[in-house]
Image (tube, rainbow, N blue to C red; front, top):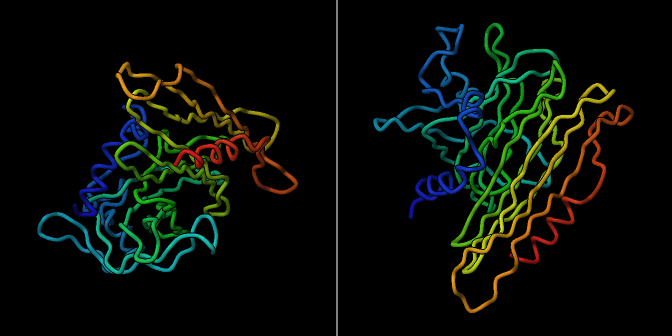
Length: 284
């Protein structure tokens, strides 16, 4: 089975995590050859070429190119693998955000598999399109095989600022592994707030799913608090199996991130999500 087909199947599997009708109004997938609003002489392909300089479309409408520009991984220098020597994709996700009171445009390119890592390679790029478009920052945000914006894509934490929400995932026959980075833009550079790990499984007699919700809570600080809630639900399916299914159950695990003015970054109020990730790892 080809890598592109596997990524398509993964996207279908993850559809509940991605876009409702409301979410789709924020993230778009424009034709890369189409012009940017207000820039009839600049296309999304021109923006993409700031990341992959030799990117071109083939006869089937698929975009291919060589290596992207050098960039860091969102988690730091010890994370991530090398980019594929040949990049390819059919489209890219586009999301407008506020950063420091300025209008910015982000694009997310999933370039495929890394040659030296189990993770993929996905570029999150930040552009200033207010005049002549220019690339402000680009980072590799892949922490698993397929990478996307996760609903709602962005969350407003002040009148002038949004945070970004992406996700990386892979699945096997009955398990789905998901990592969700929360990303801030400061000084026109991407900064990681935190990484949230969840795990779903479908067994013979029951399923266990972990859904994530995000909420901005205004307080007296420059940026709103961010409440992240994982709903961990076990649902028997009524099938007759060798093992007795667990009882139906649901619990919410919440962590709130508050802006620390002295340290100039978000700080979480508990390690509950790390404990959940540790418990999940025992079920792999």
